[in-house]
Image: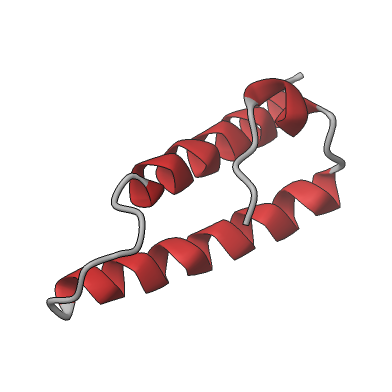
Length: 67
């Protein structure tokens, strides 16, 4: 799953934002599951990147709703 920057998030449509949010949330759950099971993730910084990307998507959705 790609990590989106703020400018890239602004270019996505509303349906694409929703799809990406769902995919990233699922990926975050999987990564956290690996860690909680005692395993090591392939890329430890990935969890942080995914959380930040989800936050960018939610911020853009909120901005569009209030504008």
